[in-house]
Amino acid sequence: MSIAKALPLLEADGHGPAPCCAPLAERPMTAEEAETAAPMFKALGDPVRLRLFSAVASHAGGEACVCDISDVGVSQPTVSHHLKKLKEAGLLTSERRGTWVYYRVEPSVLAAMGRLLAPPPTT
Image (cartoon, rainbow, N blue to C red):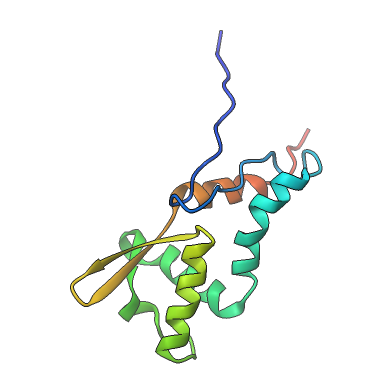
């Protein structure tokens, strides 16, 4: 016999919740679920932010120095702005080491977003 337990709301980085709802193919989202998930998808809706998020997510070791990911065709202040927006949406965490800042994709958020977008089960 297995004991199934509902997972609690995932915290991204202390600033806000990660999407915690059932997969989109399972049932329609509630208004509250949509309010929770929308800021993350909105942050990823910008091509530069999506490229930065992808650069961090795919970087060796699971983290990337801003010096390694800033070649996305915009100025350094604009890169910083977009990274800040990704952090505010709970998609990235950061750590300053000396003069550089290292970014990581928040694993719980990535897992929750993947679950949210999972295809319906095949029967």
